[in-house]
Length: 79
Image 1 (cartoon, rainbow, N blue to C red):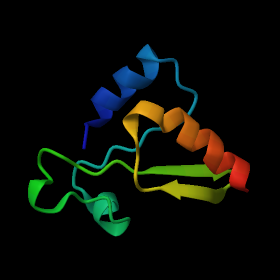
Image 2: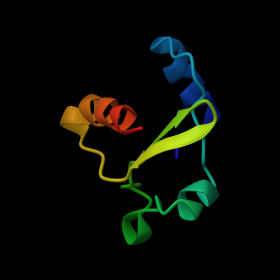
Image 3: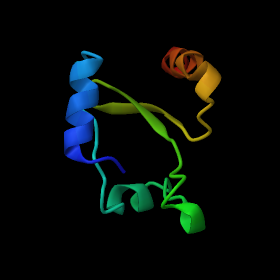
Image 4: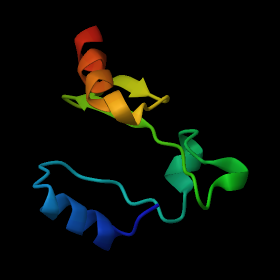
Protein backbone atom coordinates (compact mmCIF):
# COMPACT_ATOMS: atom_id res chain seq x y z
CA UNK A 1 0.00 0.00 0.00
CA UNK A 2 2.88 2.31 -0.79
CA UNK A 3 2.31 5.96 -1.61
CA UNK A 4 2.51 7.30 -5.16
CA UNK A 5 5.75 9.04 -4.16
CA UNK A 6 7.35 5.75 -3.08
CA UNK A 7 6.23 4.07 -6.30
CA UNK A 8 7.65 6.93 -8.36
CA UNK A 9 11.02 6.67 -6.61
CA UNK A 10 11.07 2.86 -7.03
CA UNK A 11 10.15 3.15 -10.71
CA UNK A 12 12.89 5.70 -11.34
CA UNK A 13 15.50 3.75 -9.37
CA UNK A 14 14.84 0.56 -11.32
CA UNK A 15 14.15 2.30 -14.65
CA UNK A 16 10.78 0.58 -15.07
CA UNK A 17 8.81 1.32 -18.22
CA UNK A 18 5.38 0.46 -16.82
CA UNK A 19 2.98 1.88 -14.27
CA UNK A 20 2.78 0.82 -10.64
CA UNK A 21 -0.51 0.96 -8.77
CA UNK A 22 -0.68 2.83 -5.49
CA UNK A 23 -3.64 1.59 -3.47
CA UNK A 24 -3.37 3.40 -0.16
CA UNK A 25 -7.12 3.16 0.52
CA UNK A 26 -7.03 -0.61 -0.25
CA UNK A 27 -10.08 -0.49 -2.54
CA UNK A 28 -8.34 -2.28 -5.41
CA UNK A 29 -6.80 -4.87 -3.09
CA UNK A 30 -10.22 -5.68 -1.66
CA UNK A 31 -11.81 -5.85 -5.12
CA UNK A 32 -9.21 -8.37 -6.34
CA UNK A 33 -8.92 -10.46 -3.19
CA UNK A 34 -5.47 -9.15 -2.34
CA UNK A 35 -6.57 -7.68 0.96
CA UNK A 36 -4.59 -9.22 3.81
CA UNK A 37 -7.52 -9.49 6.22
CA UNK A 38 -6.72 -9.21 9.91
CA UNK A 39 -2.99 -8.69 9.33
CA UNK A 40 -3.59 -6.35 6.41
CA UNK A 41 -1.69 -3.45 7.93
CA UNK A 42 1.53 -5.43 7.95
CA UNK A 43 1.20 -8.21 5.37
CA UNK A 44 -0.77 -7.35 2.24
CA UNK A 45 -1.04 -10.26 -0.18
CA UNK A 46 1.15 -10.16 -3.25
CA UNK A 47 -0.64 -10.74 -6.52
CA UNK A 48 0.79 -10.28 -10.01
CA UNK A 49 -1.51 -9.69 -12.95
CA UNK A 50 0.11 -10.32 -16.34
CA UNK A 51 -1.40 -8.14 -19.04
CA UNK A 52 -0.56 -8.21 -22.73
CA UNK A 53 -2.21 -6.01 -25.34
CA UNK A 54 -4.92 -5.02 -22.90
CA UNK A 55 -5.88 -8.59 -21.96
CA UNK A 56 -5.24 -10.44 -18.73
CA UNK A 57 -2.98 -13.37 -19.55
CA UNK A 58 -2.53 -14.79 -16.05
CA UNK A 59 -3.19 -13.92 -12.42
CA UNK A 60 -0.53 -15.20 -10.03
CA UNK A 61 -2.08 -15.31 -6.57
CA UNK A 62 0.59 -17.44 -4.89
CA UNK A 63 3.64 -15.28 -5.50
CA UNK A 64 6.85 -17.10 -4.64
CA UNK A 65 9.45 -14.43 -4.05
CA UNK A 66 12.44 -16.69 -4.74
CA UNK A 67 11.26 -17.72 -8.21
CA UNK A 68 8.75 -15.06 -9.17
CA UNK A 69 10.52 -14.29 -12.45
CA UNK A 70 10.01 -17.93 -13.46
CA UNK A 71 6.33 -17.72 -12.47
CA UNK A 72 5.97 -14.72 -14.75
CA UNK A 73 7.73 -16.41 -17.68
CA UNK A 74 5.55 -19.50 -17.28
CA UNK A 75 2.42 -17.34 -17.08
CA UNK A 76 3.18 -15.72 -20.42
CA UNK A 77 4.00 -19.13 -21.97
CA UNK A 78 0.50 -20.44 -21.11
CA UNK A 79 -1.30 -17.99 -23.40
